[in-house]
Image 1 (tube, rainbow, N blue to C red):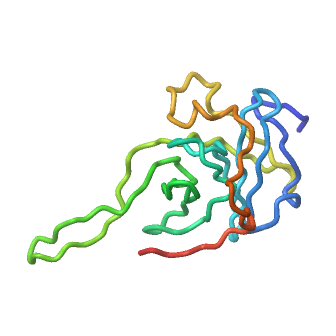
Image 2 (cartoon, helix red, strand yellow; image 1 turned 90 degrees about the vertical axis):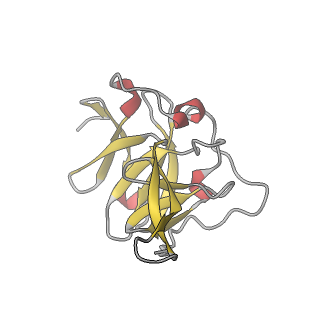
Length: 167
């Protein structure tokens, strides 16, 4: 596959993103700022690299598991974003039917963060298609999509994914 094929841009080689890490790139065709996430089990996901809420640097966020879903947590305001769907997730309270106790359940705010399709060709080359170019509706993260990569004022954490379970 060439540098640009079937609306997919060549981003990098798979071995350039260590398993269990994440890395920022710009899509060559649109200059959209993206974040590639290479999970420990080998899957690679792509989302806009700035948080939909206030443009926080998602590359500094932790990868966690909430209710069986892999999420990235924004380091600024601790918003949880499902990396496969872009849904904003939170823990809500669900009253139980037979008692006064309540149970925490994962709830969705809907799709807030743009995700992009990833193809891995020849087991080594990562290609990404900008999902905003296919006549899709605007998503909240679009307003921050072309900003440069930001960092927090504190020392940046390692980009290694630490999988935590909250449920």
